[in-house]
Image (cartoon, rainbow, N blue to C red):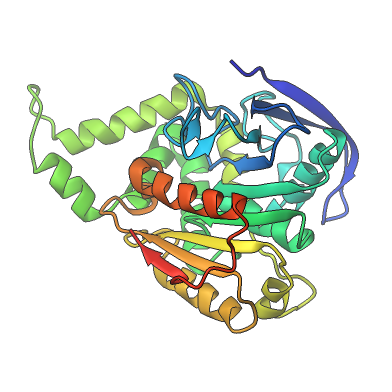
Length: 336
């Protein structure tokens, strides 16, 4: 099994001008040794971490031997977002960091590991936002970028959600549990919950949906700490590839990588309509952009639930990229 390693990032100056004496960047390495094979960086979601495979791996259905991200062929790196509590419980002055800073920290980590290019960057949710930030900072470092269920800029809807999360985390008697319960209602859909629970009750007379929500709240409180959740919620509100009043199209058009946007058609958190807008915005100035849409009733969490569909998309992208077939004439928007 992979082991958790750490890189010290000294004297890091954030976009706010604040200097961090030392940031501990923990990571796990999977598959082939660095230098032997194409390298894929996987960026985790809000309450995720660098554990991709195994009993506690959050993407073990996608990453592994003979799976979509095939460890027989690829080297896979997964960093922990500093402050996520997996390796170092908290990060002081987290308000001085943004997702753009996290992207810079990841690049510094890759540099210290001797990695000068990537075959692909894959990221879901906030990890996808970091993927966009990395692509905008170094526009051809990765041959492919695959942002999943995310956006290149925090929308007003996400700002509203992170604002409410912040208030819950500050004011609730059970902040982690209550914040998680609220978040689950953003990550799923009415159809998903209605189909699953159908107003049924348990033997104690409580509704199964309430039991399910309580389970997710209690589970998070056992594996996450409050300071980490507050920091990750803050970072989610900071995704923005534009700077210095540049137009989004100008920044997006400079990305040389093949761009594969992956959307969930029922996602209430990062909507498919926004991704269609992004696709059309880039498509007018850049040819190597593709839009993949997963059809699911599960909403935002579809990228973690629809493993077969997610695997199909990633396998298609990675196999065609390995074969140098990115100039294909097939449809550039695909629904699964």
